[in-house]
Structures are given as structure tokens and as C-alpha cells.
Length: 363
Ligand code: ADP
Ligand code: GN1
Ligand code: MG
Image 1 (tube, protein in one colour):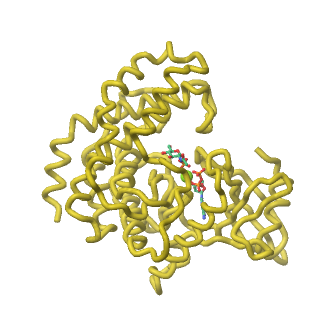
Image 2 (cartoon, helix red, strand yellow):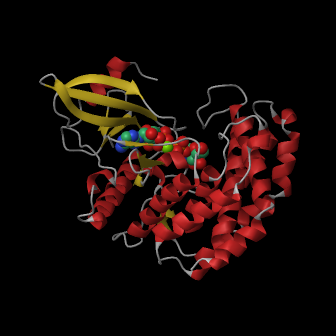
């Protein structure tokens, strides 16, 4: 973490007028360091930007990430046309004073800035069906607007990101090497994953079309308008790249149907609530419109299982590796995160029949 002085110096590299007023740590993402930076002009409020230090341990090619983001945000902005409030409905990069979309500081750290989206918030846990519907609708329409992105295939910002079979192999490697000596504490979780290894291949084998997908559609990656509750802007675009529609749908079911926090210790609170699933499904389909093929629609429920399983396996692998990927604020946090995913997966498995029936009744 950097002190405010250092952050302030970086903020000045970006094209924001006025004098710097404050730079404070912001958000609860697991990957980047994010700051809210305010400027003032003549004693009054000036520019307000969201400054991010890009985690290059995870995004090894930050230039490719920024090129993807520039193409995606420009396209979505043009698809929005003259929609009301269009400027709040898509992230807008703030260029540096030298006209670049990113800044490299003296220590080779990569930074970017977005215009701060005012009057909207993100939520770490879902609070109502309406909220789930709105968030899912925003991600659905994000996919729809990108279905006709011109130009070459987007760069894979993290290769094999949702390659669940590979995630599973990486997990097995973490079990075998057991570098942090934690394997003995998690025999039950390892067995749970091993028994379900067949889930990993479900989407790969379905012959689905490749789309431009967000790939990290968790609830706190969409901003909801504070006044109307509408899903106003999809954020956290680092992983926008080629993928299956069902990846995005699966991550929505993972984060928008369960009342508990991702790292909740009381597993009795973890479940997929059917009314929330219905809200996610209806919201997503309302936003996506008609670009999905019949096979893609059919793949959505498998997507929920695959992504929840994949996420559980990723958290468990990181726990075994000694917490090197996800930010942790306490011992055992990645294990708690893994346990919620596995409990959620069991809850989904118990409701698959009703989920499929519902899907068949929606046009
Ligand atoms: P991470 O990859 O670490 O999750 P995000 O890009 O999701 O980082 O940003 C972290 C948090 O910062 C978000 O959950 C959101 O609350 C806030 N945020 C991100 N972009 C903006 C923006 N343009 N305007 C206002 N808040 C934002
Ligand atoms: C990370 O950046 P953030 O916190 O939105 C992760 C996702 C996981 C998620 C689990 C680049 O997302 O893949 O699903 O944590 N992002 C990356 O909460 O690995
Ligand atoms: Mg995020």
C-alpha cells in the first residue's frame, strides 16, 4: 500500500484540472489498489477520479489490458448513443497529461484513472431481488452491446482465465506440492472437489459460441444508481475478453443469490435462494435480449455450477499455496471463501431441476 503523498504525486500525472484535495483508499476488490481522488478549483469542488494501481503480478501485460479497455469502453459509449445519462453508463478513462490511457511511475508501476461515477454504489452482498435483477440486467446488456465489437479478437488479459479443467489441474498441483503445509487441515474440502472434478468440463464440451464477456460479473462490479436502484454502469473491465456467455451468468448466480458474505464462517447462512435466481435469470435475459442461441440459453445453469465450483477450487488452491493471489485480511480467509463456494454449489445442485424448469418457461 502506498502513502497518500505518493498517490497524490501519481494523480497529478492525469488530466484533471484544479489542485489536489484528497486521495483516499477505496473499495473492497481483491486485486487492485483503488483510490478516490478529489481536486478543487477556486475553493470549490473540481474533478473527481478513481485512480487504480494495476496489479501486474496478476495482469502481466497491462498494456494489452488497457488496449482492451479502451476498445470496449469506446464501443459501449457509441452503442449508448444519446441514451439519458450516457456518460454514467460506461467507464470513461481519464488520459494522462501526455495523452496516454495509462501512466507508468518511477518504479515501473502501472496506473489508470476513470471518471468517478457519482450517485451510484456497489454492494458486496445482495439485499433484494430487485437489486439482483438490476445488476444482472446491466451485465446482460453489457454483453449485448459488445456482441458486435468490431476489429480483431480481444487480447486474453489472463490466459486460461475460465479454463476450469486447467484451474482444476492447478488445484491438484497445489494439493500435491502443499507448499504451505496446510493440506492436512483441508482433507474434507479436497475430497469434495475431487468428487466433483467432472463438473469442470461441462461448458468446454458444449460447443458454445465465443462472445465478448466480462468474466468477473460479481455483484460489486456493477454500480447501482442511488436514486433509482438501476444497474447503471458495469465496472472492473480488466478481464473483458473472449469467453462463454454462461461464465458471466454463472458468476452472477454465485454472487447475487446468496445472503452471506463470500468469506462467511457460518455456513448455515449460505444458500442459493430460488427467488433471487429467478431475478438474476430474468434480469440477465432482459438485458441480453435475443443474441443468445438456444444452446447458450441451455448452458446457463451449467455455467452457475461450473463457476461456483471453479471459484471454490481457486480459493482452495490459493489457501494451499499460502495466500499468494487474493488479498487476505485474516488467517484462513481463503479457506472460508472456499467453504462458502462449496456449500453454495451443494445448494445449487439441490435445485437444478426447478432451475431448468423455470428457464424453459421464459421466452
Ligand atoms: P478490483 O479489481 O480490485 O475489484 P474495481 O475496479 O472493481 O477493482 O474497483 C474497486 C471498487 O471501486 C469498486 O467495487 C467500486 O466500488 C469502486 N469503483 C470502481 N470504478 C469506479 C468508478 N469509475 N466510479 C466510482 N467508483 C468506482
Ligand atoms: C477477483 O477483482 P475482483 O475482486 O472483482 C478475481 C475474480 C474472482 C473474484 C472472487 C482478476 O475479482 O476472478 O471471481 O475475485 N479477479 C481476478 O471474489 O482474478
Ligand atoms: Mg472489482
